[in-house]
Amino acid sequence: MNEVAKVSLKDKSFLFAIKVVKTYKFLAETKKEFVLSKQLLRSGTAVGALIREAQNAESKADFIHKLGIAQKECDETIYWLDLLYHSEFLEESHYYEINNDANILLKMIRSAILTTKAKYITHNP
Image (cartoon, rainbow, N blue to C red; front, side, top):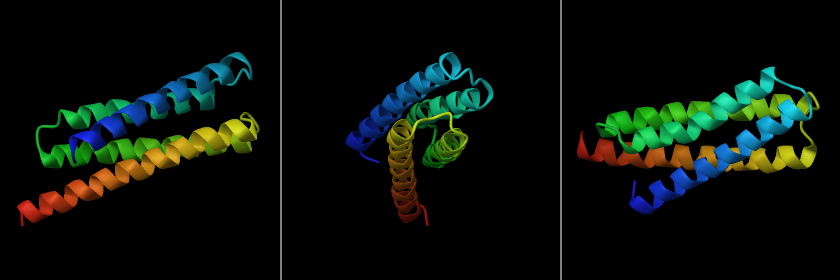
């Protein structure tokens, strides 16, 4: 993965984590929802942390593994967002904005994994 893509993924995941933290604060303070929102906070902020871990991976395989975990956390975050929206804790506009960001981030992570796997397999038959 080239340096520009790394920065973009890193920045996107950090901005997403900020939105997740703000959503958590809104849910806890305004809606008095503490269980689902805590799950959202945990998985949504883990994505960026795992992407940063991947940047310091010990090998290409370790890099792919860490991004794979970030992908799972991102998908889990989408689940919590869906559940919060359909249980009427999140307004439609807020849900669609943050859900869209999560799906874009998920696609970026998947793309990074596929690109790295393709390069890794090519160089390590």
